[in-house]
Image: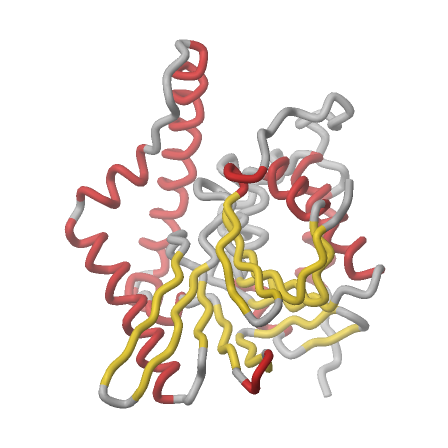
Length: 281
């Protein structure tokens, strides 16, 4: 496969380790690109909802592919989110082509700057009632699992797929207002800090829009997720774009795919992450 060369790629909310994660599609996408910089903008490994009994081979192949990109010279930034907040105690750790941080300011073409962070800092439900947010995360994972079963039946009947969570979000005024408020808050902070772009994840809503006020303007971007939307942000030749997997790939299972029941030692991997105590200068 010929890989597309890109300046910068941002992905977020992959939620590896949950039933909703579309790891096979994500792995195929990562194999199709050759970025100079790859930014993992939070909720990559879902430590909140991690189960010892569930971490399929396809999920671990995503991690292996990211490591493979690093070994080929790709600079990888892992920015922490709420579902992988355990890693925040290691923030600002750097080793070779890998950097772990909570936020990032990166210089782009024409002297422009992008401010990149997950975005959960704006979520009052996480800050004030973490147990409720975790319960909501579990419920969302179950909803995606049920939705997968529904779509399997619909496909067998020759009908189009249906997204239960999108239907709920679009029909509940509070959810629509929350997304709008989130975007506007992030954009206004970016304007105040003189940023040309602000890049977030967290709300699973891919977006590219200009926001302006009396103090200036900025471009708000959101990379979406790899649970429902299967999207990323790509930056090349001075331009941002939203990549949508379904518009570029007709996904088919790889006949050589390893069994989904094989955890491939992922429990040991996460135990090492939890026990690791880096020395940060």
